[in-house]
Length: 275
Image (cartoon, rainbow, N blue to C red; front, top):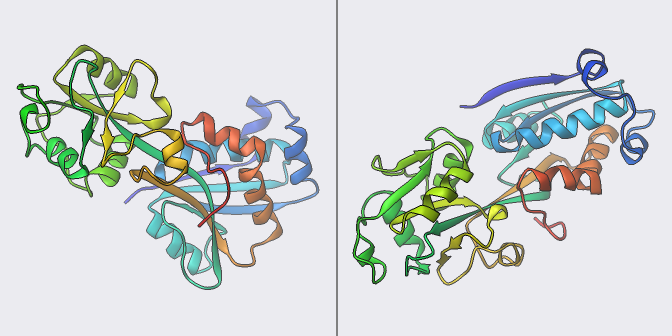
């Protein structure tokens, strides 16, 4: 189980490392407010929440934000018990008396070398390749060659997300070549016609060859239209009647500034709020 606590206080951190004035919109949202927010956050969202907390506390030194990195299940449990103000999770809260605000999406694309004739796979074929059940490309396409699996380091957030979204939690084959970054993944796929790997959809460019899964290309358009299913959605969950400070935090996350923080962390932005 993940657990990490980070406490943000203007007097302790931001007077040293940040200018005293925040953006005008952030100052307006939190003007004359004070108090503390306790937030539990899914691990992959922690960098986003850290930057958001920095921006808020920088604008108002009377606000303190405690960030706790933990599983979505634990976060929702804490929220339902009234022990925290917000849970930022990859599952919406369904119980009456609570609400979820959909605010970000993370999608995974499977990539191969441009010389590889494979272009469309079923999700079952993807799982069988990465778990080592299918070992040769001739089970997928016209290429007869051993499949070279590329994967992120085992405990990286990208690896855990890929396993969750694509493999139903199964482990990637031990024969996989491990890389420490998505840039390294792209380099391996570009260099090896027998390679297969995966990257964040937002990082795809013209040098990559993404594979269609069940007939759907891993494009931002298809993700936002709901056609490409291999994504993880994220929600800010609260009670049905959150405090004013909590409500302003949610407004900030959905504002232009909040969305810019989400977008630059390689998450996709929903076009409109939905459950």
